[in-house]
Image (cartoon, rainbow, N blue to C red; front, side):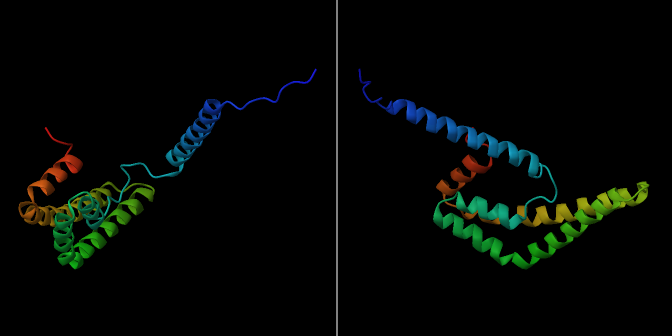
Length: 151
């Protein structure tokens, strides 16, 4: 007696492919969690990076207004960023030195705060200038994507 050839179950193949894909995704995610820096790690993202992300989420004309405004502040932002990164590195050095000198540590943290605030002030001032010039759709897109959505 001859056994008829086995028919492939189309749904079973799809489920198997989805299962393998999901497992590969989860394995990759787990690896990145152990190898990547935590989301709160310093240094914070550069203001230009944040601005570009925001611009990409806006209607094209509003995105260009934002890009131009940040382009005009490029040198000022780069200098503020350089000072911030130097301050971050100083804190790393101080924390790596034994024994920890409390006074030096506090001074390094104070400088880090000052440089971070300067960088954020430039960013904030630029956004204060740009937001009123955005279209209503641009402002709504900004709220939806960068301010926790609509209330």
